[in-house]
Image (cartoon, rainbow, N blue to C red; front, side):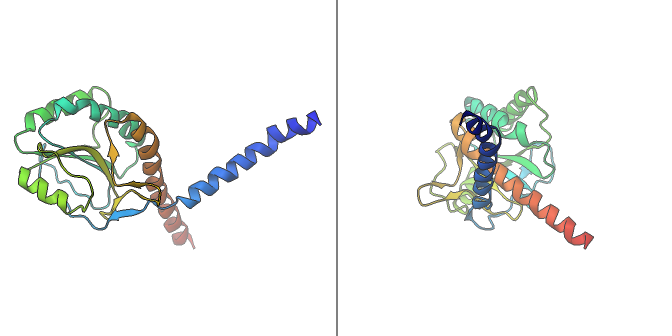
Length: 212
C-alpha cells in the first residue's frame, strides 16, 4: 500500500498537475479585448525625438500625470514585476504618457529607473493635458484620469492596438493597479504571459507554414 502511494506521488501526481495547468493555459489562451483598435500615439512628442507607435508592439501603456516623482514607487513596482521579466522580448515596450511641462520630472524618473535596469524598452511621450484627456476617453474605460491627468492604472495593448484585459463574469479588469504589488505580481504577470504566448504561438505557426 505504501509503495503504491509513493509511486502515485512520484509519478502520477506530477502528470495530473501538468495536465491541470496545461488545460488552464488553453482555456485562458486568449486574453479578452476590452477596446478594439485604440488610436495610435505616433503624433506625440518623444523625450528623445524618437518615433513611437503602438503598431506591431506589445505595449504597457501608462499615464503619469503631473505627479510623476511623487508616484515613482509605482513605476519601480512596475519595472520590477513586469518590465524586468519581459524586457528581452523583441516587440515589448513601455510607454509613459505625460503632460507637457513635466519633462524634467520624467527625465529624473527615467534616470532613477536606469539605475535598476536597461531602459531601452521605455519610451516617454508628452502631450497637452487636453489631448491626454481626449485620448483617454477614446479608450472607453470605466476608470478615469485624476485632476493631474494621470492614473495609477496601466494597460496592456496588443500589436493590433487592441486594449486587452479580463471580462470574466466574476472579474472585469481593464487595467492593473501599480500601487498594488500583488495585482502586478499575480494578475498582470499572468496576463502579460498570455499575450506573449499568443504571439510566440502565432510566430511558430507561421514558421511551420513556411516550411510546408
